[in-house]
Image (cartoon, rainbow, N blue to C red; front, side, top):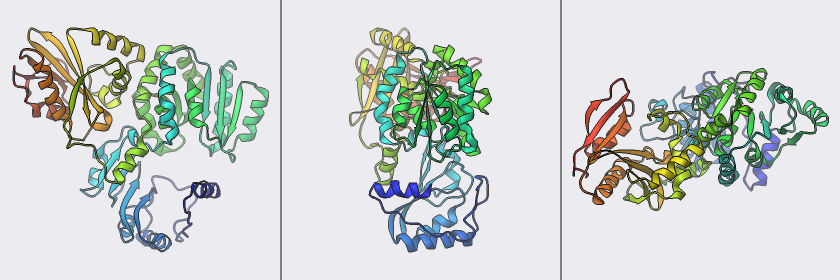
Length: 474
């Protein structure tokens, strides 16, 4: 497998160097929960790396058993260090910490990294290949139309641990053979021969070995059964409802969070797949909800965001936001923002919103005289949607939905202030109110910065009411 990796790297025009491991390091079957290597082993490996590469601008470290000891030693020959992790279980000395796990928060790492380290967490930073972002618009447009299940994708990873692919395929065949099935494996997959035997017996099965067409297969599939690893983000990017199987314990957190968000079902074994598959195949509205939840997880541009962080580009917080009315073309963008898991968790309506429901709501909202939708942009890039609802005489309720990529940028207060000012300029002064979840301090800070003050708590509700008096928009 290492030889194949070396070929891919060198074929792409990069240099590949093998660094001899110290005696402690060559372990078989390393478990993710093991403690880091000893300090001596880490220092020896860092020294060997320095001998091999010399000085460098950046070094990327992706290893569960290396910690601050190695990273600090690496600073002798690297100007900057990026650490990739998904455990948050040890200390790190880095300039950027990347954890693409869905459901992770910055606070999981805050005490584990230097104070000035930048923490990139969440699936919006998943470094997917560019073809997934390219396939996304067409894939979402096709899925939004609905329709019955016709095609299934099975992809359990190129390594196929324990012959899991053949076990999954046998369970699917027990459901029925009327579905077209694309099965993707690696050339060394344990169950490759068995899968080929099944494909010879069932004409609806197509086997693809070491294929470069994964984005295409995902775009064409209606349901996927796959490992709960990196391909989870690929499936989400294309809005593909899926059944995920945890093949390693470090995958469980993300898989559990995806199921909680309504983007996937979590299967503990292949034997439960038939029942889960029938539920999905027989319930179109369920699939539409899963499409909405999955598509909101990541847009496939994580690699670009990581690169921008590495070269020092940050959100343009020094530019003033501009406010414009929403248009029909904004509908899909706001639909994805609204179905973001964090947004739903802190909203009064937590369930994923299927596209047909959103489209109907959007059309009625744009035509309504009692509601106004505004879009905030920074340098012509949309970063937030704001809604003003007429709730009483001279009173409107305002809500703001920041794009996931704009969170933590410091833009929220300025966007809200500019939107309130723009709204009031087009009518007589009005009172503005807001309903804020008690567990959403970030939103509370945004509204308080503009001048909103807490009025009261809503009875039997985790929400509080905030008020901005007439003419007080800053």
